[in-house]
Length: 354
Image (cartoon, rainbow, N blue to C red; front, side, top):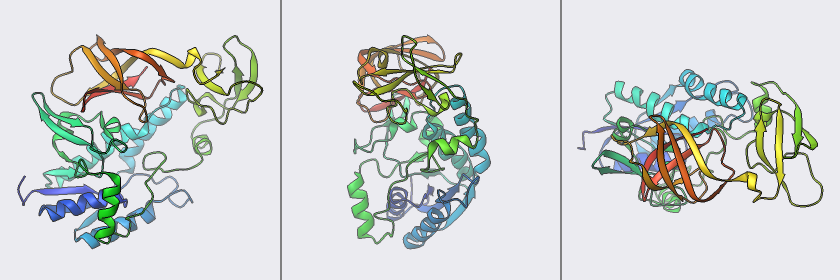
């Protein structure tokens, strides 16, 4: 890159993307900002933060001294992310909207827009690194293990990775906030965004009920005993403990399985019940960021974001389906979630759990 390199930064109004833009500007690049508006269904509700976030992003751009545009990707978000989100829930699965939000909006719709604006690269505030290997550029873990977001970015392809810059790759979150305070950014202590990607944090069941009807059914034990009622299989996920409406003596109850054919929710007692533990995973919808797929063999993988990597053996069942055999049982493996494969610090890619 040269000092005439044009980089468009996705400014969300949060501290991470703001510091990313500042760092690139300090390095002398031609930096511009874009605030992505991706959700409009309830822009006047108490849960919508778009107005405040956009104002924060504009203020930050002014402080840093860069231009900023507000670009609407609501149509792309609904078609590529939200519809998939609803379909998966209707099929009794538990999707991860952040994964598709990144691959389809932040690193596709936004990247496509940036290219039309003659940008050389896009940049975001994600905590992830990238390195050059014999098979091309590859995502790698960030220095801050507690914030590393490679799990959510595993669906990026080689082109998307090559066109992306991650200025926070070698910084920790405390260092980012400290720098933001030092340079006078007003969002230095702003709370991190949570909840559904671009939709935010809100009462989840009430939100889904706007789009999917309630279909009540029985909550049963593995031997078929009815012990309660559920309000719809889409509102529960494997491993869920709270909100089941069942009690009694003994250990806590957890969701173990869903039977779509009978509309029954199967629950078990105890965190380590055998139905919650599994040593095998089959996944499809594969994405591997490098030019060549990883060879069959030994790797580590994680089936949810906040878990430690676990040793596994990768084998291919077909061109778009893999089998992972874990060395130790994994807890609450959930259809619809992502399994992401690592080779030490490299994030190779992964797929959707079947």
